Image (cartoon, rainbow, N blue to C red; front, side, top):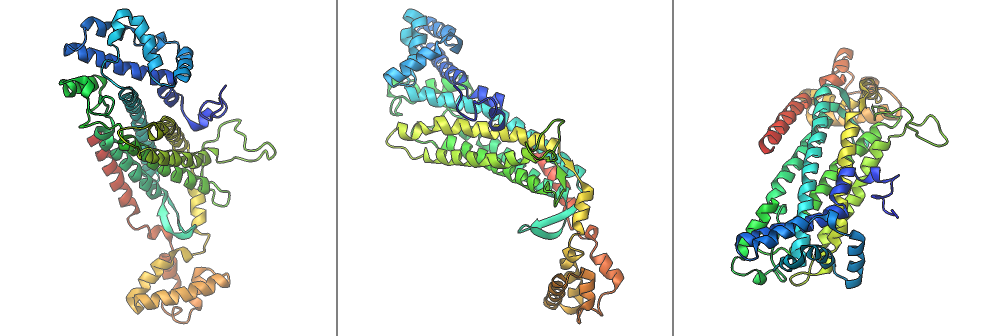
Length: 454
């Protein structure tokens, strides 16, 4: 009976994707164990360690479709061992050749390398979907390179920027995540054939060559030494997923706030029949943005749990190791959902340039106080200009004057600025700095990074 948000049919689409659930399904988990056993047997046969016929027989029967998973699970509960029941079923099908199954290996070799294979499979999906998000951010940055909006610091209006500039910052950050994902591949996509305590004593003199062949068959790198008690590889990837989730959460939260009726600067895609409330028929809630913003929290906590898993005892222990069975798949499930939802949110986003322009006038000119101050600095000095405009602004805001009126009423400023100059200096379009150039530069550098690494 489903009891998890990843399994309940009415909730799982919010927390995961079909694709990631398949990768981290029990069937695929077990199949990855069997893939390891096949690679081990074939490599041992090549080196003359086991008969070639045994390797082929093992390969013929090492398919999860031939296993009785309920019986395997019942046996796991009975004997308190996570791998042996699966091996016994394969061994029975191989008859006398089954004696050579799992020859010289230990359980953690199988389970860790199996998890590495799942990570590698999921990694390809993460890379694909990160690129999809990057593509949408690039499109928005280019389309809205010159769409003026208000920038906010500490939650209140600050200066004018463009929406393209905001999207380019997100694009730049997501591009770095792509670079991080590519850079971690040789560190993370690594398997292991180390034996019971990491010494490879059970594997004989050919152990290094055997390990290399097994892992090469599986498309994984070979470690310099056992990593059974060194869990930094998986922890690193979990932390990368948490960072990606944090970026997407920030994007979701920003778009959530920009959809407030008081701002009304963007709106997520509205589908026919989408319902905002069971009692308020008019509601059009920013459900996609808020779900994206919220998912990063459990993702971060699972990544923190992976850090806890790095603290192990001796040459290996289940206290730390088994935590990964929960935390790492959930990191991938949530991150996969966030990337898909983020891409869809950005793809369907409606940008209201008129709404953005309307908000630029909300402060009645005070938005450009910095520009006016800098223009006056050449005449009276920066410190004096700042003091005078501060005085004028505080007086004007208190007495509900617009910025031009406040400037005219200030004793020091009244004779320095005419109406025409005030109008020019308080035009948001004239104070965008390097917004457009920055967008162009980020788009170019993102394209170059992706082209170099893809």
